[in-house]
Amino acid sequence: MIRFAFAGRCSTEDLQDPEASRNWQLTRARALIEPAGGQIVAAYFDVGHSRSLPWQRRPRANELLQDLRDPNRGFDAVVVGEPQRTFYGNQFGNTFPVFVHFRIPLWVPEVGGPIDPGNEAHDLVMSVFGGMSKGERNRIKIRVRTAMSSQAQLQRIHKLELDPAAAPVVQRIFTMYVDGMSHSAIAAQLTREGIPCPSAHDATRNPHRKKTAWQQGAVRAILLNPRYTGGHEVWNKQRKEERLLDADDVTLGHRTVEFCARQDAFSLA
Image: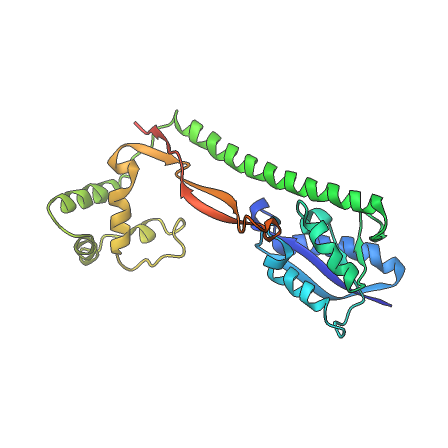
């Protein structure tokens, strides 16, 4: 019997269910190794980590790299379920030499078995899948942004309707604020009068928030909401950009930075 460690990854950026993703990757891996007498005895599966992160920055993948160095690691080879989930861009070229150094075969379904370090075709195949992985992630990002933009464009032809229960409360909050009351004082007054707070008024949209009292943060959010202050919905206010972690060592990958970008606003009136 050949003892295998399974390596895989799933993130929420492509809306995959982690358990379902893990199961189908395991199924592909087992279909490859079991005819050769292989059995998976260990699993290294990262959940919620982008494929763009190098192995050293994925917790479970990095743990696997460290275990390769252990003579008592408990497995003889490593198998992946899908290279596009496991390797991104040039990650294969930066990672596979470690497997070769410690004499641990790496099995991949698309190769039909272990990767031959001296086989140029195998190296080319893995490079292609790394590029495909990068392209797939870019397509996911484009689809998400395009869908959001489309939603914003559709909102241009619709008007928001007032909530008959919430509208008078919002108007009163603005009146109390203009009269000089602080956020905390407004929250305390509304709570004393038994007026339902936002999480109590619409529990389905706020399942994680307290429903017993008004919070000054809720009052502040209402006062700053552009829907109430300017009649505009703001889309694309927060953007994410990937920047190199270290410009002198691109193998460390990128870090995601959030920043305020151009604001696309449209009237609700």
